[in-house]
Length: 342
Ligand SMILES: Cc1ncc(COP(=O)(O)O)c(C=O)c1O
Image (tube, rainbow, N blue to C red; front, side, top):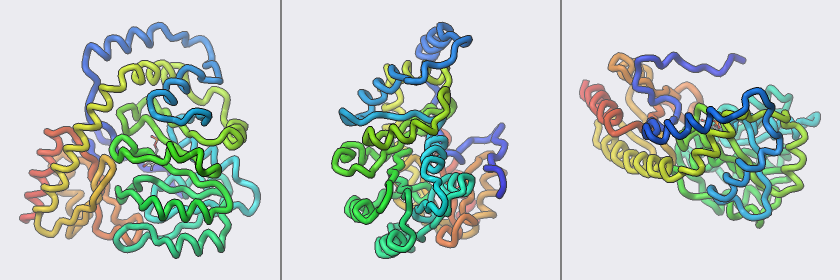
């Protein structure tokens, strides 16, 4: 294994990690600073995290009666789910290409990982998924909705069949919910074995590291047993509470990114040799004639994106472009247009 690679982005237009590119308005930052000043850094967090959980539930549509568990980013929640499921012989299953942390966390927890290739058009290969479920009897299945790095949503009826076939848990990872605006959250009551996981990262708070997961009480109680008691720090808690009171600011930024996504997609479609894949997230997977060459060409023009072409055979020639501010996207479009003409 190698440690999770994060390139040095200083001086670049940073379009490699699906962050929200917008800063907060200055008056809001001043209020936030005041709020953080009042936090008692000498005290441990109160491990129930009641206020922030209530605010998350109320503002982000967690159904009545579904408890919420918090993680230091959803990365930690993925890890804790796998840790809780890691009895000898346990299997975790996910479609591939998918979010790399499912496999990495599974391996670190001694859980065997089974990846099921997507169809060539990046839709779920439902027969292959159902066969793999029957063969490997996974303790947990991860479904990213929408998927990273392909950006698409799956058909709800495919997910439903997977849930019905699953002998264990199904985690629907809705990290990109602000951009997809479709969710399984309101279906939690229908399917006891489903957990919905989300994060505040893509909404604009990647730096504070706060993920949350909702599901039926009997499951969340089990995962709480493996959660370190103070895994979310007091500054994160206070910042999240404050931002949930001002959610309209982040919602407006997400709306702008959704419209920039359309603009970027349309521009990519016009470029010779460039094939963007429709996205419900804040990034666009794009096939280009020479992924490594274009990545280097963008870097030379001061833009950092992610070359995912080596991640999986289905991704050959693919770059993942995070949607940036209008000015950043203008720069990206200009640079790609030059590369397409070269
Ligand atoms: C599908 C998916 N889930 C989870 C995460 C992790 O998010 P967090 O910042 O909350 O750890 C990512 C990050 O890229 C992601 O793409």
